Length: 328
Image 1 (cartoon, helix red, strand yellow):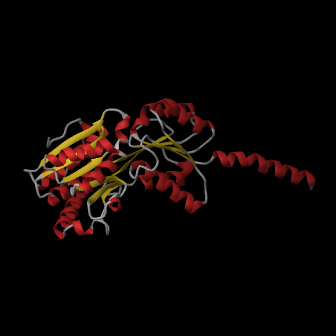
Image 2 (cartoon, one colour; image 1 turned 135 degrees about the horizontal axis):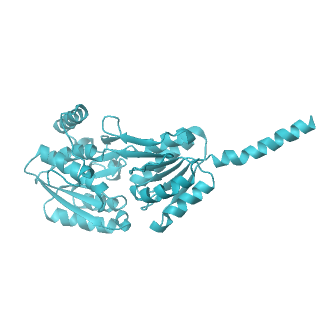
Image 3 (cartoon, rainbow, N blue to C red; image 1 turned 90 degrees about the horizontal axis):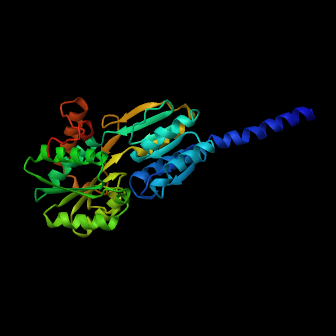
C-alpha cells in the first residue's frame, strides 16, 4: 500500500510541472498592454479565459524590437502552449523560431506565417473601415475628413483605404486627409504627435478623424474631443473614452481570438483563420456613448453597407492585394 502511495505521489509530482508547462502565453506588441486599443483587446480576451476557467497564463510586454526572438524562445523553453502574439511585426521572427519547437502551437494575429504549428489570424480591416468611412462622410459638415495612422506599413494602409472607399461611396466629393505618425515602431506610442496631427488636420477643415495608431490614437481622440472634432477609434471599442465625441470605433475581435486560442490550447488547428465582417471579426461599435451621434439615416446606411459587403454586392478593395487604393 505504501509502495502504491509512493508511486502515486511520485506520479502526481511528475505531472505538476507538465500542468504548469501547459499554461498558455500572450506576448503584447510595442505600445503597452493597456493601450486602450489592440493590445488591451488581447488582454481582455486572456482575462476572460482566466475568469471562466480559473486557469493561469504567462505574459510578456515588448519593450524593444530586439526582444522579439528572445521572448518567443523564452516562453517556448518554459513549455508555454499555445503562445499567442499580437502584431504583424512578429512574422519574420516566428517563421524562424516555430520550426525549432514543433510540439508548441503558436498563434499570430495580423500576419500569416506558413508553418505546421502556427495558426495565423487575419482580419478584414478594409470592410470594417469602410463602414467607419460611411459614418464619417455622413457626419461631416465640412466635407473633409481625416485619417491618422501609426506606423506607415501596408497593414495600416488597409484601414486607410477601406475608410476612404466608404467615404467616397457615400460622398464622392469628400476630401480625405491622410497622415502617418512615423516609420518606426515608436509611431505606435506617441500620443503627443497624434494630437499634433489631429490639430493640423483640423486646421485643414477635417471635422471627423479616424485614428488607426495604437497608443498614439489616444492622443488623437483626446485632441479631437478638445477641438470639437469627431473621432473614430480602432481595434477596441473606444467610444467610452470621450462619450458623445467619438463617432464610432472600428472594432476587431482580437479579444475573441485570444480567448478562443487559449480555450483550444494545444488543439489549435494550424493554418489561416480569416475574421471578416460577416463572421463578426470586424464591426463598428454602437452603444449609449455614441447613440446621440448616430442618426437613423446613418444606421440605415451602415446596415445597407454591411448587407452589401456580406452578399458581395459591395466589393471593398484590400490594399495588401496589390499595394494600391482605387479611390486615391
